[in-house]
Image (cartoon, rainbow, N blue to C red; front, side):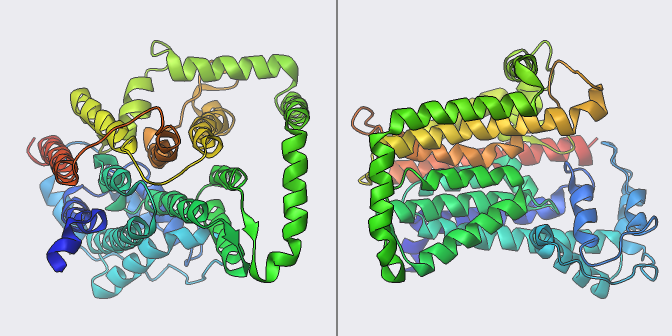
Amino acid sequence: MVRNKLREPQGIFLVLATLFIGISVFLMPINRVPDEMNHARMAWNSIFVRTDTSFDWMNSVSADTEINKSEYKQLFTEKIDLSEEKFQPSFELKRIMHIPQVLGMILGSIVYPSIGVMVTLGRLFNAVFYIASMYLIITKTRYGKWSMVLLSLLPIMVQQAGSLSYDAANFVAILGFFAFLSLMIENPQINLKKLFQILLFALALYITKSNNFLFLLLLFPINFILAGKLSPLEKVNQHIRKLIFKYKYILIVLLLVLGGLVGIKMFGGIQGIKELLLVLVRTLFNNNLNGHLNSILTVGMFGYIGLFSVEIPLWIIFIDVALLAFISALNSDFEIKKIFGFSSLAIIVIQILAIIAGMYYAWTPLVLGENAIISVGAQGRYFTPFLIFLVPFFISLKDSIKVEMSEKLLRFAIILTLVFNFIVSTGLVLDTYWFL
């Protein structure tokens, strides 16, 4: 029985995740993971008052590629003074995603108040949260199990899950909603319980990243039925759907016009929209202008690890992409309508454009100044969880695309690819940070 469980996608994930992420927690040097210290500061300030001196002890941690072994050892042996830290929990909703990290850091301060111990325990708690959540999600989803296993154990996600980053919570929220959508497609009835679950996922998506709210749009292509105590509203629901179907082309035109007017208002007229479109095109297609396109943005979805100092070879990324596309297109007994499949593909594009556009207005002016010709600040790891939405797109095309592989060979290919990715990334981390 146990052996059979370990052969299932969630069982393989549990074994590999425990091994990979467990090693990464201790292997990745402190302050050598993108945004880890910023996210750690946010976590710490969720329960302690933010002052000019709070969290000051973390500023002493070097971010240099070359590690001074004796100084690094002191991070674990030298106790820090936390007497100036004033306990005052924040009840902001967005602080929820920091709970695993901050619990570990607090426990570390109780066990032995050194930076090394606190960070390591914070990482461990984040890792446990990620592994437990993804195990449950993979178990529950009705399709895309193997794609989830592959995506959740790519080198970039192994690193982020084994750090203090809230990327782990972001990944869990998106893939959790993906699994919920699969259950909705299988049983489109919405009762009070389902409605409550939708509200919880809406909250989780908002808490992690505001742009995640866009995923709620994928509820609309599902032809849901109001049931239980909501059944009195079912006639209204069906009437509205009939009207939408009858006047769909008029509605599309109205939405395009409304979207255009909003865009003109937001971006400073038609000229502003043209300039933004040019920025998006240059950022996503012109590597001569955007030097980070092939590295941080593209390779970063799979394995640009360390503090942007360890890049997984492109030929390995090609293997990952090929396998992801293959298993996402595997023949499935599940039925998905084309409108939902193409909506899932569209949401990937929309999310990427939304993030790059958002960074152009929020981050780029701080780095390149006003009126820059490209957008900077977006990283490939932001896009990694979006790739799971390729699965419903391919399933919706199963009449045109037929891909088959035996379960045994599929399992072997995924395990071999993930183990190979991990060995290479671990070797590069060792060579970059510990052996030089």
